[in-house]
Image (cartoon, rainbow, N blue to C red; front, side):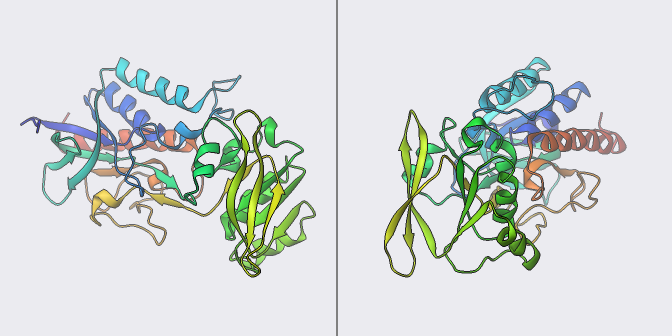
Length: 328
């Protein structure tokens, strides 16, 4: 086990847009931040770089007029942080103590550290069905994604039939968004009635481009590595018969799970599991000196640019709080 008696000014947990932005701002404020790249997701897997590591092309982040691959973008974030001498520990934080000061934490490979301030930016992981074919086609831009706002405008979906899996408000929102691009949008739902709110459900039912695939579950994503997704194999939950639905893409809209399990309930969460902030315009939590940013607190937008903005706020809040404590 490696450890140090040095108490860090600030430790950042997480390495998505929020984490790296916080690191850049903290470093430029001479806080000499230490970044632990991850925390276990709901599936106990570390994803340095966050959800953008599953996105082949980012077209809506300002400053990249020709777009940029998600992994390439996160590598650029990382390199910019390293330029300011940000120190990085490539481990998951599996234990953290926010009840005693200085705060302390431990990584899954034995590294321990302590700090006067902590920024939690561990993100949220999209919920997946767990199919092998789903996993295969979500890599490399082959047509499976969990964010219509991020990927819906891609050429492979334009004027083509696509599917959205889910039955809640998020699924309807994704489907409504995709009607701007796709020729038709099939909502695949295991029941014969949407779980979405009445007003959202009615919007879907009234939209000519949306087709309801009631009482259906996804058995397999069809296609190949060259063409990408070409269809879905569905099973009727009543007759148990299977059928194929031709589509060029599938959007999962069955929720996200914030990566907060490692906190063991030391910070408050809302009904969806997202960390709660003391002030919606700041990054402060109920524990002084602990700040949060990015998708781990955001169930609404979940965009790289909003996460980066929140990372900036968290670093500035941490800097000012440390100054108030006489730690500069």
